[in-house]
Length: 108
Image (cartoon, rainbow, N blue to C red; front, side):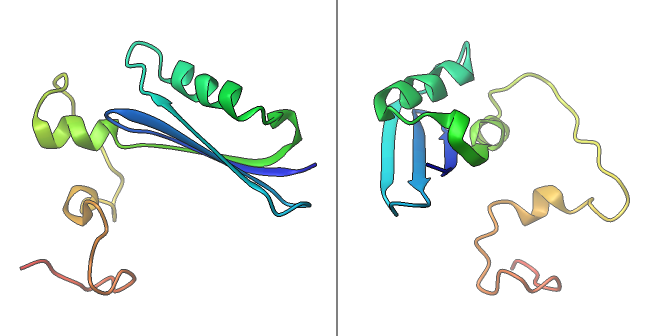
């Protein structure tokens, strides 16, 4: 078996999805986000799913915790340092633009 695996740690839940390339079977799991150890939430999902990730050809991980902390102004003091050409990272935000790949799009 070969899996494509993805996990997302959010403010409340950690979501996990594994797709078996050979059988075309999708496996999903959800657990509570564990703030003291984010990987514990992912591992809880992994246990619930019974997927053996040693057979994963791809594992993607994402989180909304950073942007949530920024938007709520609830995190520690931090700085965003970017290289030339990426100064608009915060302006792009969630990427919910009407034309997602228009690099010249401007918010109202």
